[in-house]
Length: 261
Ligand code: BTN
Image (cartoon, rainbow, N blue to C red; front, side):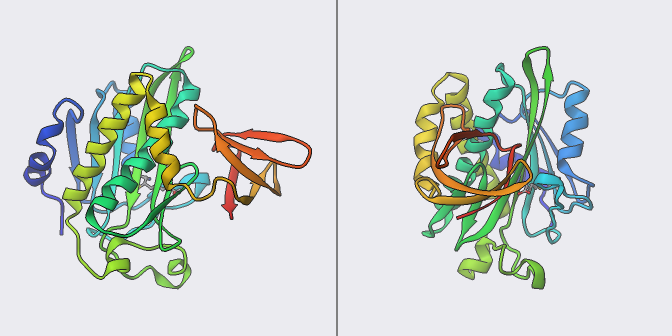
């Protein structure tokens, strides 16, 4: 099933102040790549790129993002916040919060956020987010928020079945992708507005309710080595505070990978 332009436009009609232009493709290389080239050619804030299939879906840390055709959500949104580049980490966290809240609206399941922005269900990944940004002078020029969310896929193959899940794989029910996309963007609009008004602290409180990692010992890759420490908290910019016996680290998502707890 492909996402129909009129159906999507209708579902997003209450977000006209937030979502400005909508591009829908049956197949692309990567929605992030399309959004990035649109952003470079001055596409306005709120430009949304949605695809039913990606040939070269990009994940974090150079990984690939693989998804069946026409059953999941793959989209990228261009935002142009007036902020310093460091503040963009917060948008990563707020994107994951928006997804968790939207999914929660459709099921009674418990979703978890793994810092900074993986959304998990039943201990498996249901959503991954790749944010790519550019800087102009000292300010952020734009950010592309790329979201891949598994909705109706049930077969993840032998390599991924223990790591990935979807709403349908977990509950046995089929879900309306467009309704969920509209809910994700509705929540993102709320959190983005708070962010722009300097009130992201409110949203971060909600984010922490979904994060089970805080207070636990985590194992992670940092400076090329596997290390461990206690994930104490996140700071006001969304950086992770990790306590080790002899030092406390303040980590950005670019510095740390493969977190386990
Ligand atoms: C991750 O590794 O967890 C991030 C995955 C992000 C995947 C999404 S799908 C839509 C957008 N386009 C891409 O190429 N990647 C992101």
